[in-house]
Image (cartoon, rainbow, N blue to C red; front, top):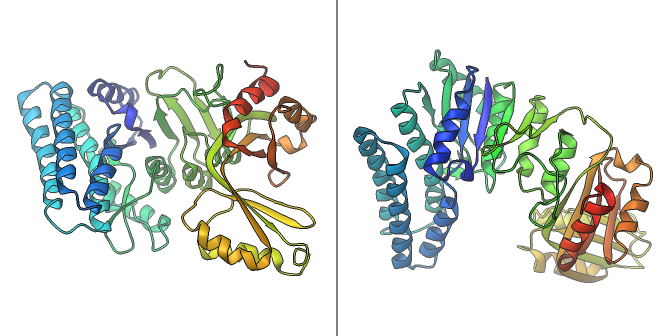
Length: 440
């Protein structure tokens, strides 16, 4: 059994849903199909929650009405039979009745999670109606019945496997299942979610739980590219990546893949394929245990980085100094992306400013603290590039015009990371594209 995940752009228009139906019926292998919300829906649901959080029920109502009208228009192009349209309109009306009820009661974070869940619930139900009209046998597989996270917001892998195995066994004879990405239940049993990009995570968790033959991630890009096609003139898809290489690229900014997606599939050695809904014949990118080749494969950039420099000639060499610094970040559950040390200073980067002021305050007793915002991490990723001849000379030769703030090299065999001021990001990506790949 394989898992196929389709993102918001892949189901964002009625004709795209029709195309998804064609893709999932191209072969007879049993499959679980994971769908995101229609493109734009989650952002709109976030806006509804924000309006309610500030007490502006009129604004929330206006957003709800506009989104509901969009869905009813969507239905008329999705299905043709009157009975199917009535069923689909009834489904949408029920969900928007729920949203309207929320505007009349006291708002809280638990209700906000319920709001955010509506997108995936509606997309899967609408797709099910279309499949039914097309005569395609399938079953809805409610994610809220098996996908769960613990008190630390981590997926309960063993529980997911146990529940999912039981549900599939109870539906013996069904070879096609449709389920929701992103949404889950938390340790309290409340509706929750796997955060942004969580549909990728859902697909990978399911693939691991059922020991799937493959986990296919379908988007609007033909695989992982060697650079960011939004800012670089010419890029090419990468044919094969190892799990480690893909994880590095996803974490450091490659938008096609959610950073958490790799881990579950990697644990069970389930291959992951990145494919293009609009160009299904394209080879895309396959992610497996094996890297396939040695050398530089791709470049990714991560914005919103904050650099923190702690300078202390008195304490740096003291026993336990670094541990004390790390404990501050651990206390505020703020991960560190990069770290460099010198004789008198430690520099680290973070991507979450939520507790920045408190972190700086607790670091000040250790020495002088400097904070630089508006930074970007540019990562050059490839198999064993730390041992690849001339990689550093080519890299820095390419970046002569760019002031580099930090370099992380040797911590990973697959990654060389640079910290630069964000205004230099586009120039950096373009220079590296030419210097490392020979592409203008």
